[in-house]
Amino acid sequence: MAEQISKVKRIEVPEEAIRTRNLEDVATSVSENKDAILKGIELLESLNQSGILDMVNAFVKHREDALDNIMRELNKPEYSGILENLTNLLLLLGAMNLDDLQAFAGRLNDGVKEAAASGASEKTSYMDLIKALRDPEINRSITMLLQFLRGMGKD
Image 1: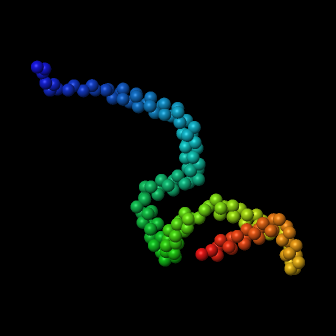
Image 2: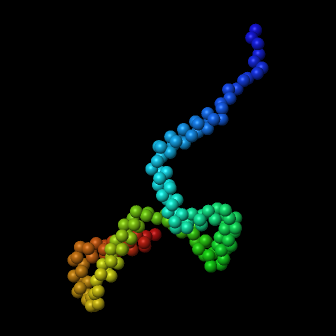
């Protein structure tokens, strides 16, 4: 019969070899991520120059006091309406089709620009309105407004 193993001798890796392997891993990682590291350094420099880095550092060091002050401010009566409606606002944004809303807002912005550019101070007669319906852009806008009103009025 074979003799039972009673002692296991573990191979000990010298600490210097571990340190050398770790340095090689870090050097490889730095080499592979050179662009990201340089951009990170540039970002840190910008944050430092603007003073935001000091502010964030102070916030992290004194986070309990800072969060206590923030919560005390948010508990004031003038902010209660905002906080109560914040959830409803987020749910509303989730329910909206933002692509369609963005297209509608773009057209609305174009209309506002056009209205601001024209300094029309003359009155519009009924005949002018009927003639304006022949303009394809005006006709398209009125049709869109009617469709909007129709959709808004559906049960």
